[in-house]
Image 1: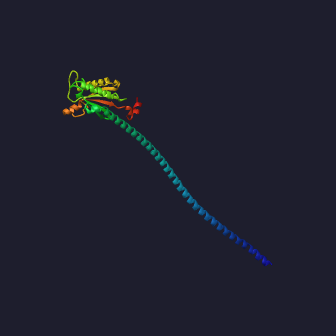
Image 2: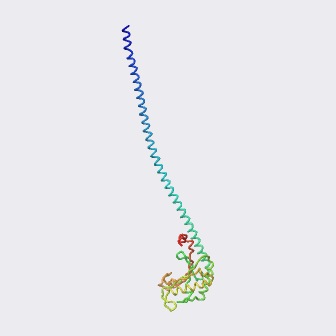
Image 3: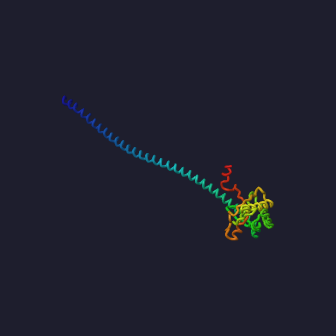
Length: 260
């Protein structure tokens, strides 16, 4: 009986010890499992962090791209606006050119009989319509008194010019380079201006508003031909009636007007 009690007392601590060892082993396994899960979670976190960093970088790149696109869109819109403005200006210039061409054709048609008779020519000089008459059929050599035929020609010209609305006319006297020095005409300036004034007076008498007519002399300094030949000098002795452009149709007119 005594021996049995001793044996029983010796067995109880061993069972508890084994149970404790088993419990510890279980705990170790649980810790190992949890550690593995932590490792997996760390790997997942690292992957997600990498994806987040990549997504952040992509987002920043997309934002820069969007900003660049917005800038390009603004530049494109500005370029389109400038192109549209340029096209409008070109259309206006084309319309003005067509109007000027038609006006020139109309002027030629109105002077057709005089052109065919060799009395005058209609030209475009520096973008301006010019009616040109040789002074040899208008004036005597070295003089500024219109001949009978010359006066009739200028009156016919006046009747045509009077039908052109909203335009002014400048009469320009041109001479050859042969010097003149008389009491009445001390120089070619004086001869050219006297002839221009004589023509302007007949134009006004023929129906042109005097406020639309002016006279000028260029003497020999704007030759139309050579002064080395007889025919060239004859071509240089001329009267030009310039159809003064309407400045309101010219580019920059509004800007010039704003400066007044």
